[in-house]
Length: 223
Length: 229
Image (cartoon, rainbow over all chains, first blue to last red; front, side, top):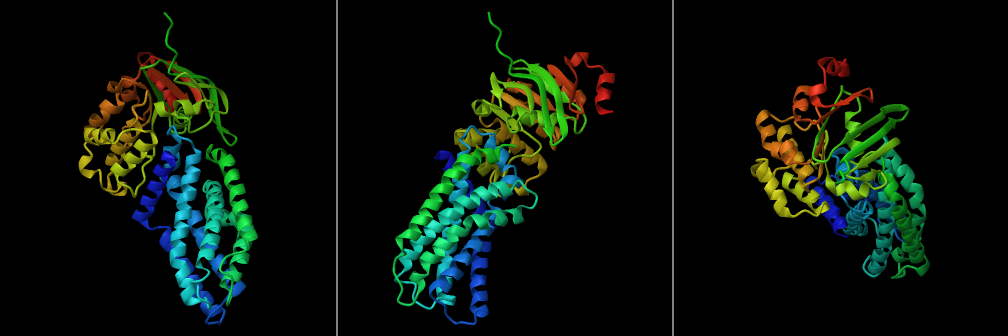
């Protein structure tokens, strides 16, 4: 745990110093909402359409973070520095996934109000709790899968391309569950909490990929 | 009385990158507390050898034993006892020297006091809070030396350790990575004469093959020339 906190602290400090990842993710999501606002030619949207726009935008914004997750480790010797220490290598996976999760939460703290302001018809107030629960589970999926994929992609020359190409197919089930779960929440006079099955699917998806990532991450760090 | 096990023992070490063998059947033994100088031209396999000893690379054939532990199987057992100074400083450019060293200190479970001691020892306290990207190469190398010796390793792997250091800076870091450090060392250098004065044993590499393993006094000028031809 101490190693996880050490690496996480370093990653957050690096982001605070450089602002290379979060501002790009936030700017991308807000710009996309603006684009949708004009492209759909509707002043407001609701229901499944709103859920689709929100989920897809957050997913693509999240992928920007995935692509940058291991850049400092690769370019500035962070991998070697970590691998030379007598620590459990899985700590790097947990710390990187935690950093990405934090980035996604911060992104949503800005993007969700922007979405409500620019596109969403119904008030976000009543279903906010349900939306947050759904997004937290979706963020976990993106954080775990994104970290795994980023660790693979960073060792390739075309890492900016490889990351999304591998990540997107793996994230489709999580995207479907999040959008399906959020649709009724964002409808006019909609539900206030998502259906249990979508939460269950997301939670199981998170668990399966967390175990998978834990099992294979050590091998990804080998030369 | 039994003799202590060697700090490093290599038997027919081979390492490839793709189809190309970078090290081919290298064998050498290094006694605890002594210095091995690895000499050879660019691409001879010196850095690869050091990376294998540091546990960063896996050998593809042969036997490697470091501090009594076989690699790569028992790499985790020796990582905390190895200090590695490679071509890259392994420091984050956007963090300060002090932040970088504290990060590595936490990974190695070393106290903050040691960080401050080392910063003072290499004369970097006055610039310790500046981002690494703003420092000269010599200053970065001094910080890299601090990182390598932070956890007081029993084995130092030094890949051209005096690169970027002026004579004054080289003298400053000498107590940490020189013979005075009193630990087993493996060093590479593009200054054969300097390396010979520091070494107890010399390994000559050419195209990944071992040309000679001998004492410094036994290295003939012809043999040296042969390495770089």
